[in-house]
Length: 161
Image (cartoon, rainbow, N blue to C red; front, side):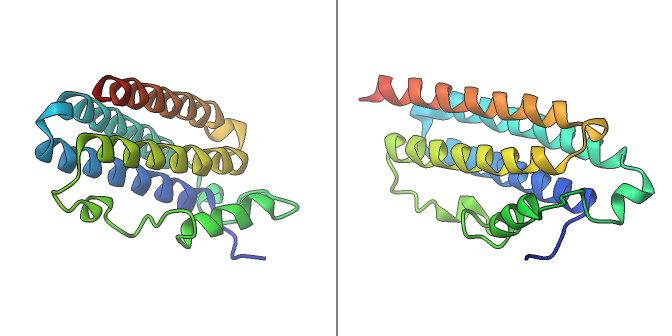
């Protein structure tokens, strides 16, 4: 079984996911004027998610910051460990560094869709590790918004084809 996380660490990972997403969108927007507006709008949304997670983290009680989150079977902990270790995506790596400057708008939008799917998978695991009183409903709302991001990106992609 992986090392357990406390709620503070889980929110810290979520904040990093949002920072990475916003940075990716801003970097891509600089390179691609054709999709600049949609990418900057998505970056702004990721900024709002970051604020939400930071606020949730700031409201944690001392006990929520210290012991591992309640996960009697260890499933959420194992899932989050896999995510944190970079098997699905690595929150320690700057996603903007993946951009070479030679990407087409279609390439960027496809990459962004993949990143949004990864973040949804992470947040579904996160939701299971967050007690209802600590803001599980906010995590659910962010999952729904990330799903809307995929729709937005897919719609923009279809207009480029």
